[in-house]
Image (spheres, rainbow, N blue to C red):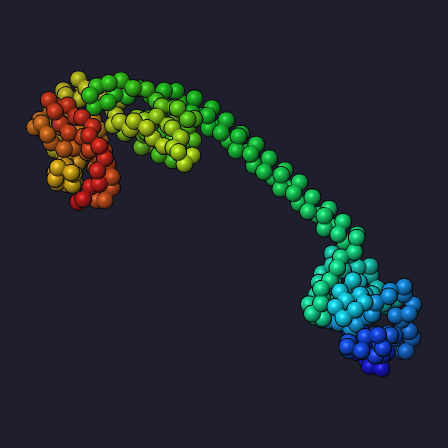
Length: 307
């Protein structure tokens, strides 16, 4: 006999060597409380395997294992469950204890039919909850798209002009908003909206398309302004805010930089043909480069400012 404590409660164990399991350590035959009253015996059950003493964390447990040297852990009986005032143990705890005992004894474990049903039930419930979550997210995204589309429609179309004087129309949007437009929509990129919701400082016109990788992309980007070309020519020529240069296949070229498209168009009246101009940006930024011809600005392509 040996005496042990589990969570401050004493137990007296009767251990025997089973003739059919000489390769195993002593097995449990009887458990009594601290006063010697029997509260569990192996023979009182209908189990045909063996009962081994095991630990699951800090808890003492009876591990009922199947026959044979490699008998798996099939059932567990926590010592605490043998007390008169013991509370019922729910199935999740039993499964967790069974797994811990299997690790302690270096054995495999098997789940009962009800434990298997519980796990299958939980898996189905979790899959259903995940499906419901995805549906709810999809509905929320759809509602958000409708909300954005309504907001875009309420803005109306903004009329702008290319540097060559061509009239264009598009939905005014910021850099953060344009990917939310529908595929095929025409957009006018503006710097911001004032407190009254009026679009300010339009910079680009383009069409929204889907790229081959599924991402939104700008097509046909064109520099624009809200001022007609005739009006722009009537304004006095102004100097650039600074100068930079670019490197092309033909060689490096100086670029005059301006604060806005209107300023750039105004300045081009007094510039010689072949002058490169662009909107001001930090060095290293890729910007749309235009060339002056006959007092007008013609978009060429994007280049990186090198100064």
